[in-house]
Length: 517
Image 1 (cartoon, helix red, strand yellow):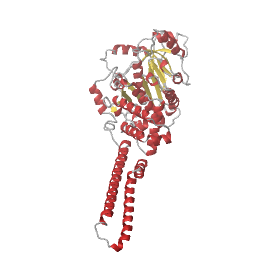
Image 2 (image 1 turned 90 degrees about the vertical axis):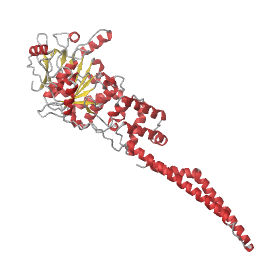
Image 3 (image 1 turned 180 degrees about the vertical axis):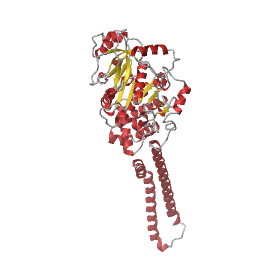
Image 4 (image 1 turned 120 degrees about the vertical axis):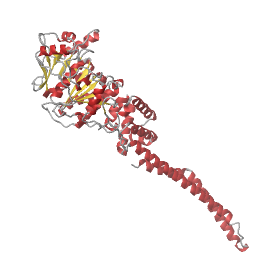
C-alpha cells in the first residue's frame, strides 16, 4: 500500500483490499451517509492515512470526537475486541498510535485563535455572511473601493463600522462617483454587523492573521500535521462556519502556486456539514465554489465534502468528486427513495449486487466505495468494511487538549491580538483635524467680528470728541461721510462673513481635510 491510503476490505461478499491513491487524492472526494452510520470514523481513518503519508490535513470537529486523533488508541477501549476482529478480517495489522495535531478555534477557547482581516474576507463573502440584499452588497462594494482609494486599511469590524459611518456622512459626494449610497442600506449593513458581533465574529476579524503555511506543516518524523478546528460552538452560527471554511479554501486557491499533478497532495481539506455551504446560497457563490473545486486541485489541494446526503451537493460540484465513500441512506419517504436512486446512479455498477440496495443495507462501519484507479477512472462500486482507527475513538479530556496546545509548534504565535493603526483610527484623526479647523475658523471669525466692531466704534466716537475748527467744517463733513462709508463697509464685511461667503470658506477648509489622505 505504498502509494495509497488503506481504506479497508472485507471477507465474503465484500471487496478485496481498497486504497485511495495519493496521486489522485487531489481529485477531491465525498463522504456521505445518515447520522450514526460511520462518517466520522471514515473521516478519522482518512486523516490518519494521509498524515502517515506526510500529507497535512485540515478538518472541522463538529462533535469533539476527532480530537482523539491526538491520542493513541488503547486495548482498554470498549471496542478493542471488535476492532481487532475487523482488522483480522480485512488483513490489517492494527497498531495503535497517536498523530501530530494542532488545535484551532475561531473563539480561541479550545485551540489557537484563527483570525483574518475584513479586507482579506472581501465584500462577496461578507455579503454572504451578513445575508445582504443586492443593493446592500453594492454599497458594501463601494465601501471597499473607497477604502482602497483613500488608503484606509480594513482590519477588523471596528474599521468597517467607522468606514460605513464616514460613507453615510459623505453619501452625496460618493453617490455622484459610484452610484447611490442610500442611508437605509448603510443602516442595514450596520445592523448586520451588530448581529455578527453578537455571534462572536469580533474575535475572528483582526490580526495577527492566519499564516497559511502553518496549516501545511509536517512533524519531525515526516508525518503531516492534522489541523483540527473546534466547531461545536461555531455550529451555533452555521453561516459563519460555512463562510469561514469557504474563505479558507479561497485563500489557499489564491495563494498557493501551480504544481500540476503531484505524487501526493500538499494539503487535504475536509468540509464537514457541507450542506451549510450550499443552503440558500446565491448562484454567484455556488459558481465560486465550483470554480475553486475545479481549479484548486492544480494547486495540490484535495477537498472532501462530508454530508448526510449526496443531494446536498450541487451536481456541478458532485461531478468533480472522484473518491467516494457512501454510508447507509435511509429511504422512508418518496423523496428519500429518489435521493437513494440518484446516489446509486452516480456509481459505476457492480454486477455482483444492486447499488441502491447495498447503500440501504450497509451497516455501521461499512460503506459503498468507489475510488479513482491507476488511470484516473472511477472504479466500479464495492462494498467495503472500513478499517478501525489507530488513534483514540472519541474525544480526549480538556487537560489532554491543553497539553497538546501548549506543545504545539505555533504556541504563542496567535494568542495575543494586535491592534494596528487602521481605518478607524485614521478616520478619527481626520474628524479631529476637521474639528480643530472648524474651531480655528470660528475663532478667526470672532476676532474679525470684534475687530470690525472696534473699528466702527473708533470711527464713530473718536472724531466727535475732539474740537474741529469752523474753517474746516466742510472737510469735517467729508471725513464724517467717509467715516460713515467705512462703518458701512465694515458692517457689510461682518455680515458677509456670517453669511454665505463665510460658510463657503469654512466648507472649503473641511473639504480639503476630508479629501486629503
